[in-house]
Every structure is written in structure tokens, then in C-alpha cells.
Length: 545
Image (cartoon, rainbow, N blue to C red):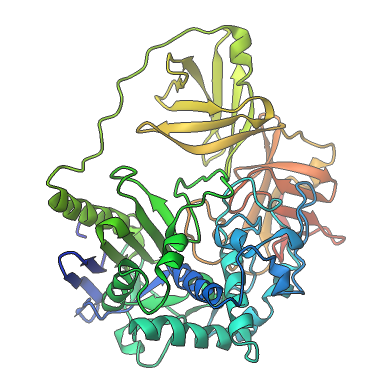
């Protein structure tokens, strides 16, 4: 913590085989008053909330009240989100399973009004279908890529409330059901989707990366996606339930299906987390020792829960400081690794990287099949044929500066760029996918698309546009989240129109979209009659050319 600058941290570790439950706090919950973190100190756990929402949904499945393959409109008849103007899709084609696996095509943060200061807005959850109906899909369901979606999971929570407590407003119905059927059954007395009076004395303060206290007067109205607060004691109880085959909460078969990675849609997964029913799967110790996990980010609070069902152990870590984004994951994996090594009696260090491949020349005609324009979650890459007959990789940094790197073909079929980056390709033609290769694994896929062109009317879009109201996204689970998109900046780079880092494709003079995929990919932006821009319910006014 000294190295990272974190003020406070809470920790829980469970090993069912050893009968071990270790909960402890480190550092300060209130630095000014020297109040220390204990295992009772309550932290915001943000998107770990989604794991409780999916648990509630699974209970209703067991009760025969819902079916994950049913369309959303069966439970929310008014749901009518707009088809993407280029990629298509329809509200009736979205199932509950697609929502749970982040394959619905609903953009990650399509929820204006999702956060407020000064208290909860209960009408937000009540009005969620109407809010989503003003939005466009980012892709046709099931989406081409996994697109992490706070909006999609919030809609699942709306369905939980609709089915379980139909006579109550959706906000109160969701809270009532989860209190009675999730938290109370696990004796998690200091955990809730809302702030309870008995919890307030135990709240940790939050701090920015410089150690300055940050106001906590923030309410997440999209409860199901990210509003839970909890402590180490309660999270240890949660981990015990998960490791004990869902005791008192879910049937073992249901729990196993809930935790399993997706094997249905096989969508490209930018995060490499193999998301299934909300839960993600990671394999740092090999495929025979899978970790099921979810992290949460509600700055300055960063949290993670990881379980290894096969080894009956799990861990929870949360920090209260903006500098600690990656710390919970590092600590959690280290704790699991050391305990696993003790159980197995051998080192679980990552295997050594394979020996370097060697350069191998192939014909220009073979090289040409890789030439093209590729997009990922929030940017683009281009493969060009140089005058010297070698491929070149064109990239842009966050300051919009481009650079070109020579690519050398290797005898293992990969390419090595001038900066040491290794690339691999799968598929052919328009279905070709480019990957970065790290530690022998293919990561960060980018798909080949038609290169966007600059329309004659682009000058009317070029420039800096500022949001006229605060952009209220949910938590920022991924680095690629469009957190606080207060400005849209349109410009041209290497003959391609961009909005920030996203290449832009125009449908007509009044409509364009981000030609990317994933959480914010496919975002539609429209020009209004008064000359302003509209996107995700937010109006943008041009500030300068």
C-alpha cells in the first residue's frame, strides 16, 4: 500500500478445505481522524453488484417464473430500443441470456440519469424501458463482440422486480426481493443495494490518487448494475456460499451453470475474460485451475472477488483510493497462488514464454490478404503494403499522432512489429481478425472492416462539441468505458474521419456512428434541426471548429 499510495484496504480469504476464514482491514477508513479499516468497514463494490443480480435471476429460473432464453419483451412488453441504423437488430431479438452474457447489443452505459447526487431517484428504474427506447442498439443481437453493458444488467434487475414483486415500484421491489432472498439468506447484514441506517457508521471515506478526500454524495440509480456496498465479513459469507454449492440460495446445478464461461454465442471477447452469466473466467494458473471472478470500479473504490470452486477457496479485496485500480486483482491472485501452491506442493509460476520464432519470407500476394482497416473497442489499426514490399502497421496514440511500424512475418505464422509487438490473424477475407499476442495468448481482437471515408459535408461536423448536461455513466468497469464523455471531438486522420479515437462511419449528413465494437462501439450520433448533436440522450453544442 505504501508503494501504491492507497489509504485503506479490506480483505477476505476463504479456504473451505482448511476451514479458514480470514478477514482483515489495512490502513485508514478516515485518514484525517486516523480511523482504521477493519473487517466491518463498508466499501462500495460497484459492479460486483451484478453477481447478486444474476443470483436473484437464477432463483426465479429455479422457481419456473422466468426462462433465460425468453425474449425480454415477454417480461417488458414496452421495451422497444431502436435498431442500429446500419447494423440492424431489434428489441424482440434480445433474450435474458444475451443480457446476462453481455451479448445484447445494448451499449454499455445507455442510461442518462443513472447517477445523481443527494439521494436515489426511484423513478429511474421505473422508467428504464422508456429511457432505453430513446437509444439505439450498438450492434444486432447476439452482438458480434462481447459488449459489457451496465444498461443490460440493469434491465435484468428491472425484470427481477417485475416478476418477483409486480405490485411494487421497480426500485423498491428489487430492493425487497434481494434483501429477503439474497442477503438475508447469507446473513449479510451489512450489505445492500441501498444505504441502510445501520450501515452508515461503518462507511469508508474515499480518496483520490493524491490522498485528497472525495465526496461520497453519489447515488447509483441503476441499482442492479453497481450500487452494492459491503464489508469483508459479509463478502466472506458470500464466498462461502458460492464454494458450498450455493447452500440455502441456489441449487448446485444452477450455481455451476451461472459460474461457467459462455459456450453458446462464442462472441469475440475484448477483455479476454470469457464472460458467461455475468461472471468472468480467468486461467492464470492453467485451464485446470479456473478462477471465476468479477471486479468493480466506482472511483475511488476498486474491488474484486475471485473464487476457485474446484479448490474451494476464494478472495475479496477492495481499496478506497484512486491510485489503487489494479491492486485488488494483484493481491487476490497472489493470495490464491500461494494457497494453491501450498495445496499442490508445487510452484504455480506462469510457464516460460515459448522461444522466439524466426523470420520467414512469404510472397507479396500472400501478404496482401492481411492488408486492410481493422477496428477494436475504441480505436483502429491499419495494415498497409509499403513500397519496399513489406507490411506496415499504422497506429495512433491517445494524442492522435500516427506512426507506422514494419511487420516481419515469422515461421509460426505471426508477425512482429518494429516495437516488438507480436500479431496473429485468424479467418479470411472480411472475416479476418487481428490479435495482439501476449505470453503466447491471443488478446485484444480487431476485426477487418471497410475503411470509412470523409463525406463532402464533414466540415459541418468537424470540431469540438461539448455536452450541455452532465454525462452520467455507470461505473467504469473497463478501461474502454466512455466515462464522462463531456466532449465529442471530430477530425480527420490519414484520410479517415474520427470522433476522438473512434473511426466514424456516416450514414447521411445527419447521422453517423462509431465504427468500433464492444461496450461503446456502434454509438450513434445524430444532428438535430437546431444544429446540435444528440447521442445517448445527451445534447452536444459546437464550441469551436
